[in-house]
Image (cartoon, rainbow, N blue to C red; front, side, top):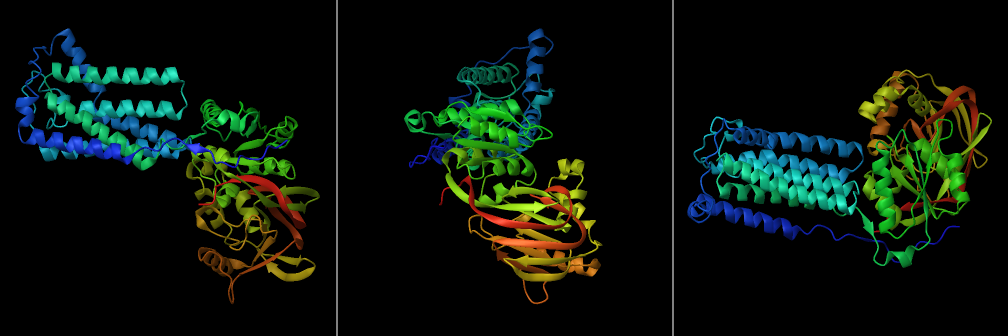
Length: 528
């Protein structure tokens, strides 16, 4: 049985304070002034005695090896690779933070060229680590950024408290060892190393501030009382969730912090994208169903939830994510989780569709003709590489598509009887790339929206694509016609492919569709 959402919104962790960044930046600027004016030479750099480490000694070679491993350019490559990995995992804020951290190394290079401080005399002057000016210390800077990266990734992956403490402790040891290494090789002044640490702090705090990477985890003060006994089910497509263990940790952590019980987990199968799994979840009397997968998984789960009153929370994991995009669900996994616990349960319409002898329910759009042919001809291997660009490639192939004849009745009234290349019905109308096929469609307006597109031959198809480029505005001579109603009946002169929410289902000589007002409840963003 669904429990009403609490009136008080879920809170968030205190966002990163920009003041910390400005304090770090001011400290670095002041320290740099002290270095450039010579103050550091007499008041700081005399604190450490000169090192007598010999390059050919055992410890000299150990120090040389360690300095290679802490080279700033090596750290930059590792950080950039982690940023790309986070982007693939739909941790967009974390990816932005790591990308900014990687940019810190080029900024360091520019900084030390501008200051141009000579290195101290060193027996390791021929080392690759001794190339270029010494301020600020690139190795200390790089290790500071690396430690911050390790801590940030551990937080994002919801590592245990013990693991996070160990990460911070080993990070402190690594920074200390880097300072000792740079001193032993006489590659940097003490003030250079302090400057490197301060510059690393500037980069790290700037990355947190700009990306907001620390503000994507919901929490609830005294959550146990507010959400006691509430439990969610997670229906997920294992082919879409890239790292299941990480995804499970993130969901379980977010639920626990919001005061919910541990979620139930249901994995979809090749021959069942989520129907039986959702029925099983409802049988467990859950209060919400999180669905993580592509458009097919979302459609199957939402179809089973229709009429139950149990809200669906969409965690985008596919290429299109059409329902989530139309409802304002963030593509970032952490933000989508926060929305599931902090959003508003909104009733939206669904559409009952009958074609080819089968009846289905969906919340986005379905149609016959051009759109189904594009879905059918899209190469799944290309989609993995270029994502939505694969649909563009498939669309170009349809330029010479042969039109069909369609007789269309909306609420008993004939609205079209003639040539068409596509007949589309939808509850929402926005596609990827900002294209709005049904600009007047609203998810809860109680209306079914119909689009009829004409575009036979190359010239007609070019006109149609041009109209879509103008966001599909109707007008005199437009190859598109839009109408609204509650029920549509379509008769075709031959079998034409059809698709439902992006999945090609087969071909048909006609279909009927009718609106199901307020049939589904979905978690959406709170009004601003």
